[in-house]
Length: 82
Image (cartoon, rainbow, N blue to C red):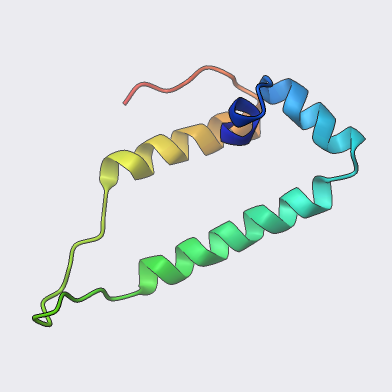
């Protein structure tokens, strides 16, 4: 949805352009890399300069991103409120 918005297209138009342009494998690869990176980041332990753990969780952003991903997967263009 973000890429569609940055391209000035609706999600449906963006999806159609991706399919017509033969870019589905590239987009699938990008999603896979993003998920792999998220897994690595979630497993990482971040410490500050004093060696104390830093809480990197941001529940609000995670909930919004999950809702956007679910909406995109189902083709639902409505945005979640959270």
